[in-house]
Amino acid sequence: YTINEVAVMTGFTTRSLRLFIQQGFLEGEKIDGKWSFTVEQLEAFISNPNIKAGIKIKNNALVYDFLADFEKSESKTCIILDIHISSNEEFEEISTFFCTAMSDENVSASKMKLERQNNSVRLIISGPEDFIADVMKKWYEKK
Image (cartoon, rainbow, N blue to C red; front, side, top):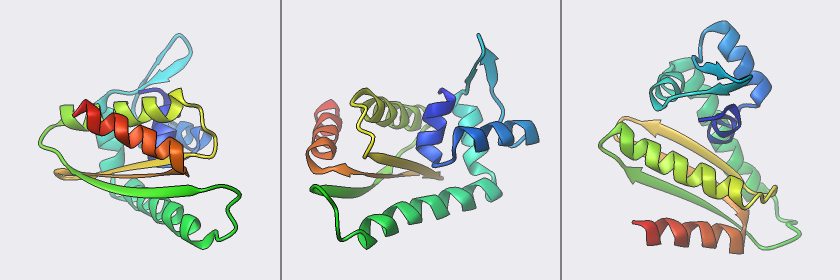
């Protein structure tokens, strides 16, 4: 994963992630000047109790902000999807699919958060209704 993908999944800024790297909370490898993270490194990072609490706060804030905004300029949707998984490979498949889908379309009004606990992945995505519907359609067609 790139540092931008980790930022999208966790809700932390790339600046915060670089600070976590300096502090030893997040391990990765710098290749040609760009940070790269394996699934195992990401898993270790988001499993840290201090980091997990921060991610949970950001996830809750995403949903709360969506619910609190009654004056949206366009139709938007927010989806919370809990997916049962049995392996790191499934986690990688889910996170890669949604990171790619969210970045390929380059919809700046869209947001995504990803949280893993044991055998479950909680995905929270929000954005323009048609965009989120397309992403979810691609996900279910893929399965």
